[in-house]
Length: 66
Image (cartoon, rainbow, N blue to C red):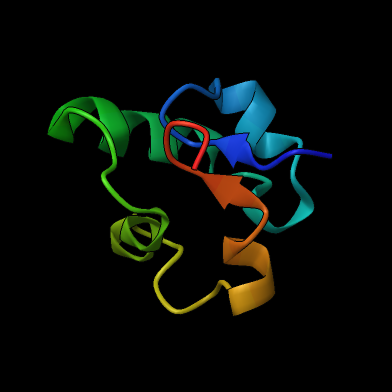
């Protein structure tokens, strides 16, 4: 499966990923408030996700297809 673009994904799509389950609406709210993500590691700034994602999990996400 290709990496999921966190700037384009809906809350439902984000929630469909096991390690993001329950955080989809907060990720979308954070993204919308800040005009989008410029790097995947910014997910660490989303309330409830700080320090919870491993390097392998970062690799399954993308920004703009990168």
